[in-house]
Length: 246
Image 1 (tube, rainbow, N blue to C red):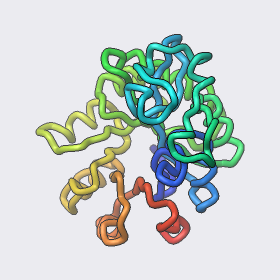
Image 2 (image 1 turned 120 degrees about the horizontal axis):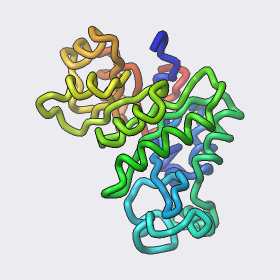
Image 3 (image 1 turned 120 degrees about the vertical axis):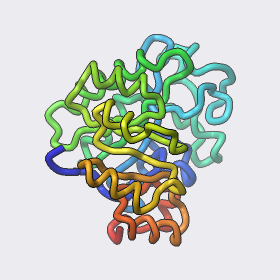
């Protein structure tokens, strides 16, 4: 990328601890705390509609049980995705990618879309999310950053819409991680924050890639990471970190 257009502080799953994660309510809470960049998880409904959900099942964050990919978007849209978090959010529906794009674009925010496929649908999800995102953010100066733990999903996204920036998500440093990020044409790597050190950051920056970390929730870790020169910190603690001061 010619320039890195994303704010350093990124709200995890919206404001996924103060409000029901991956819903528009969570995005609004994060925005009220001063955040201008958000991370969320995107998967596909049974009929191929991109929507926000972290888990493979609906059990934890909705009033329905069973695999998320078994329902159409029309069925998913009628669920309660907020009541589990508290009465204040009862009746909050799941968020479609379309609705999230409308909110983000209307407010001039940035977004990191984590491609979160259910098992067996990595390539299909990567392709669909990339194509849908390219349509929804057409003409915007700050495109969505597509990330995933699944190389197959990133490769499919790359094949579908090469122009959208991509980031490889890592929860451990296996042999060849750097080469894999390069081979996928990624502009960034997003690490579990304890994996970061000066050598890792220097290696990425030396190759023109950015280094981001998740999920950074305590001040000491944040200060250490900022001192390393991290380009992005994804946090649940939107009420404790002031992004303008980052």
